[in-house]
Structures are given as C-alpha cells and as structure tokens.
Length: 327
Image (cartoon, rainbow, N blue to C red; front, side, top):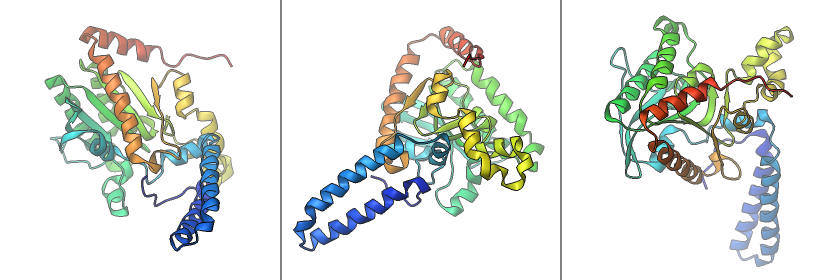
C-alpha cells in the first residue's frame, strides 16, 4: 500500500475506520488479545465500506480522484514499469519546460520513447513544474521526442495528466496554440505505433497535444474533457457570479461525460485500465502493473501492423469520432 497524505471528503468514513483499526491493533500488540475479534470485524467493515463508496462515485467525485495529490504521476510509472530511463531536456529553441518530461526507456526488452505531463509532489516541485500546465517550450520538447521516436522506429508512449496548457500571456506570446497544433499534425503522421494513457486529469488542448495516438487508454478514475467542470460552470452559469464554479461544478461534471465509462461508450477511449480498490493513489505499484500489462498488450497488437495499416486505422479512428447519438 502507498502512504496517503491527502484525503477527500468522501474518503473520511474510511479514514475514521482505519484509525479505529490501528487503535485496536496497538491494543492487541500490548497483549489485549480479546480485541482480535473486534479487529477482524472492523477490517471487514472497512473493506465493504470502501467497495460501497468506490462503486457509487459521482462524476464530480471521479474528477476529485483524478486530481488527487497522491496519485502516481508520469515519472512514477516510468520508475515502476520501465528500465534504463534516460531523460532528455529542452526544446532546442528556448528552454526546458519541467511540466513535460520524456526520454528513452525500455518496456521489458522493448526500447520506447516516453513523454508525459508531470505535476509536482511537493509545493516547491508543483511550482517548478507549473502544476503540470505546459508552456509552448514543453510542447516543442514533446515534438522533438516524437521525431526522435520516428527517426529510430521506436513505439511512442505518452502519459496525459494536466489541467490544460498554461494560459499566461508569455505562453501566448511564444505561440501556445501553434505549438499544440503542430503536435497534433505531427502525431497524425507518425509512422510508428503511438499509445497515450490518461493517468489523471486530461484537460483541453493541453492534454490533446499528447493524445492524438493510435490507441487511447485511460485509468478507471481518470477524467478527459474539453474543459474542467469549474470552467464549464463559470461560463454556463455566469449569472450566479463568482460562486458559479463551486455551485454548479458537479452538474457540469455530470453533463460533460468526462469519465472513463462514458468516454469508452462514445468511442473516444479504446480501453479502460482498472485501478486498485480505493484508487490509484492507494497502491501505486499495483496500478503501475495494470498499466504495464495494458501497454505491453497494446504495443504487441500495434507492432503487427504495417505502416500503411497504422496510418489508415489512425485516420479512420479520428474521422469516426463525434457522431450524434440518439438518447
């Protein structure tokens, strides 16, 4: 199990039970063996309550899980799943953007190129990485790595986890929209297998710039949307004033259809990767193993296609998205 440093509101009943179980455990260790039956009962109660809570999450609660500070980030997955990772820096134009990381690694015995958003774990690291919101330099670094994968014929794996591209003036001055658009164009034309995995929050074009791939995988409690629920609420319910985002975020999350289940139903996501009971933040290692298995399976599937078959399938995939569905 992974140490959890932050807890969400709907997790509080679990925390209270965990404290009670720890208290009983301490009493038993001090010699009060009569409490063993109560300890076992509380553990069963905790397991059942955890199942009840996580099988009935609302879309807004899933968004909160996707943003959980303790969820594994890109470099965690690289550490758990891959070997021989060599991180590459810089866009060769302006600077190195820490909000996007990437480089060469091995998935088993297979060399791959990895690119992903990286949020920080500590306050200092979050500020350094701009809370996972890349600037144009980050997307151009990603583009350089896309081209490196193409040059050496290596599969490309991207990890998506960002609130969105950084909306600051300096990012616009340096061509934020152009950098994202260039990545989309380049991804659409690569002659190598490409796979993206939404591991947390996939927000707007900032996520899509790493996500136009042959296969889109998504963790069970991740979310993927054109806009955040809060941003959507502030636009649609602007008459409610400054509190609109807070008051209507849950309604927006419900209607945005941003959960893995909805996105798979609509054909946006190809496969949903299960998370451990309690979410990815509860057990990084088990989550990474689930992701690794899905990745290996998908790479093997795509590696059996010719370049023309890859390009044709990729074209059909994105041309078929967005049909109007009858409800």
